[in-house]
Image 1 (cartoon, each protein chain N blue to C red):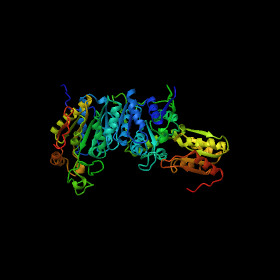
Image 2: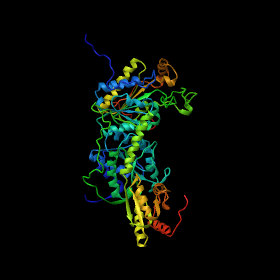
Image 3: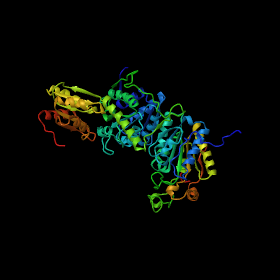
Image 4: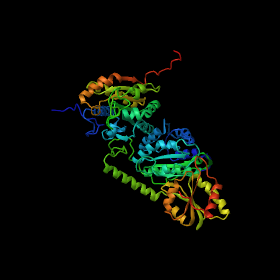
Length: 360
Length: 258
C-alpha cells in the first residue's frame, strides 16, 4: 500500500480501524485529542461506534462493558486521564478482557503540563491500578511503528485476554511522517474464539459472567496463579526490542525507548563520526522488559547510559538487568523539555573520558 | 387428576438460596425483574449488570449472562455493552450508595445520552453491605453508623430524589418510583418494571425504575417494623409514581423575568 503522510495520532486511529476496532470510548485531553476526533469521523464509516464519555472513569468502564461483549475496543488518553482509568484497567485485567489503551504521555505529576514526557513508565509497567496484575506495554519511536504496534496490540489483547497499552509521548502523537498500513495483514498471534463473551445465554454454553470478584480466598488464589502463569508466558514470548550502532566491544551502551531513542540515534551518528563506539538497545516492549538483551549488550560495553524523559523510571529495570555488572549513567529532561542530540553527545563524551557515576 | 402450575420460579432466576438478610426486599425485586424478563421472552438475549453493594452477587441469581461492574459504574458498563450489541437487553441493578453517590455521574449521563437500557435502582436509604453507613438517600435524622446522631441536613444536605432528578433531563426517558413492601405495591412495581423493559425491547428510550426497599438489619428493626418505617418515613419524601415518559413533552424554558 502506498505511503501516506499522517499525524501520529491519526495513524494510531486508522491502524485501530484497520485492525477491526469497532468501538471507541474517550474523553478529551491534550495532547491526544486527534485520536478521538479521528475515531469520531472514521468509525461511523465502517459501521463502528464512537462515544464521548462524561469522564475517563466512565470511558474506561464503557470499554470494560463493550470488551465483555467480545468486540474489538479501544480508548486513548493522556497521563491524568490514564490515572482515572486505572480502576477499570484493574477490573479488565482481573476479568481478563482484551482492550487496547493508548497513553500519549504528558508531563506530571498532577495536572503537570501538556508537553511530551515518559513519566508514566512505572505506572504502565508495574501495575498502575490496584491488585496483582500486568499489562503488555508497547512503546513506538515513529509514526509507522505506532501504527504497527497498535495493530499488534489488538492481536496480543485477544490472544492473552488482557489489556495492552501503547505508550507514546506527545512527539509520536503530534509529528507527521509517511506511514503505510499492512493490507490483509495476518495477525501476529493466533486468535482464539471469544466463547467467554457475555452475549446472551440460551443454554447452549455455560453462562458467561464477566467478573473479577472471588470472595473465597482459595478460589482467588487459583485465579491469581492463573493470571501469574499468563504473565510468565508474556515474559517468555513477547519481549520486543531493537539494537542499533556498534557491534562487538564498545565504549557506551545507550538504553532508551520511544522518541528519546530516536534522538539518541541521531546523536550516535555524530558520535560514530567522532570515533566513539556507541551501541543502543531500544526496548519496544516495556513490559515485558528486554532484560537479557540489555544485559548482553551491556557486557560488551564499558559503561551504560540510560536516557529518559523522567527522573529515572526505566533505569530501575536496567539496574535489575545489569545486577551491578557495569556502571550506569543517567541523562534526562523532564517537565516537557526534550533531550537534544547535543546533550547525549556531551554525556557520552564525559562517560568515555571516565566520568564517575553519581550516587543516587 | 390433571395438575395446573399456577406459581413457579421464573426461569430467569436461578434455583439458589440468596445471601440477602431476612426481611430485605431485594429477593422480591429480583423475582419481579426475572418475571418481567421471562414474560417478555428476552432471557436469552439479556445481560444483567451487578453493582457493588448488597446485590454484588446478583450474577449468581439471575439466569442470564452477567457483568460485574465496579462501584457506581454499571450505567457506563451498560452503555459499552448496549453500544457493542444493540440487540441485547441490558439492565443494571444498583443500590443507593452505588447509584446516587459514587455513580451519580454515570447514571445521569447514561440517562442523558438516552442509552436504551434499564436501570433498576433499589433505594433502602442506607449502605447495606458495608454495614449501615449514611447514604445520599438516608432520611433526615435517620441514624447510621457514620451519622450516629442522625443525618444532619446542615452538614450532609437532604436526601437525593433520584427519580425526580433524572426526570428533569430533556432526553426522552421512562422514569418511575415504586415500592414492594406489600403485595399490592409489588404488583404495581412489576407493572412499572414491565413498562420499562418494554420500552427497552422496543428501543424507545432510557428507563429507570427506583424501588423503595427495606433494610431491617441496618435500620436495626424487625422486618414488619421496617415496612412501617418505610411507609411512614420514606414514602412521604419519595412519592411513588411515574415521573417521566418518552411520550411526555419536554420542559420548555420559560422566558427570563417571568
